[in-house]
Amino acid sequence: MTFFSPTQVFLNYRGEQLRHSFVSHLIDAFERNGINFFVDKYEQRGKDLKNLFLRIQESKIALAIFSTRYTESSWCLDELVKIKKLADKKKLHVVPIFYKVKVEDVRKQTGEFGDNFWTLAKVSSGDQIKKWKEALECIPNKMGLSLGDKSDEADFIKEVVKAVQCVVATIGLEEEENHFGKKKRKDCKCELPDLKKSRTKKL
Image (cartoon, rainbow, N blue to C red; front, side, top):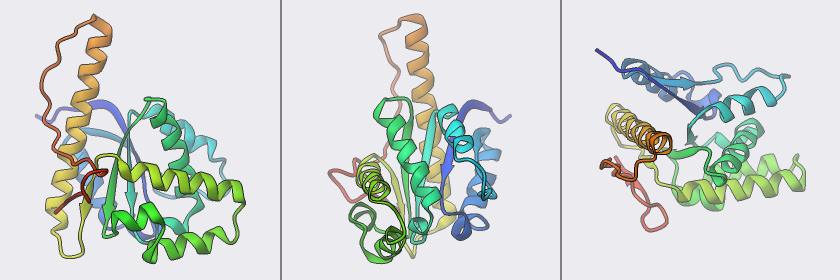
């Protein structure tokens, strides 16, 4: 019997690149494992971003799925700014996922990822660019997972599921402690790397 978690996971990703490939496979895995999630499948043009910001606020976990075309979308970057804001306030757990893109290219806006960023920056305001850069420099420093060009995607998805399940368990323990005033915490073995000290966990 599959356990269903009420903790919502928000998926932040470039739909045109990943919707029908990696993200669709990830969603299938989440459904099989009873992980509750929100995904904006259609990136509804013309709708107020406040609707998506509300979904982010309702979530306890956000997966920021970086890919080469991620920075083509101001939509993705605006969501990321909101995610950073909530994470800074300890209201959201963020797991960065690097899908066939280098961590350093995300941090420093270089490579194909950076080329797309600076193309978008040409038609964006200075304030937008500043906030986007701050989010792109901050979020990759959190513990996350990276998929290389020659890696097995099916195995990688299993690792993402395990990482999310571990964060869900950690959140459950924190909520239990807050509710019952318990100080003793059970061990939860999250083996995600600290990206400040290492490049990332590659599969």
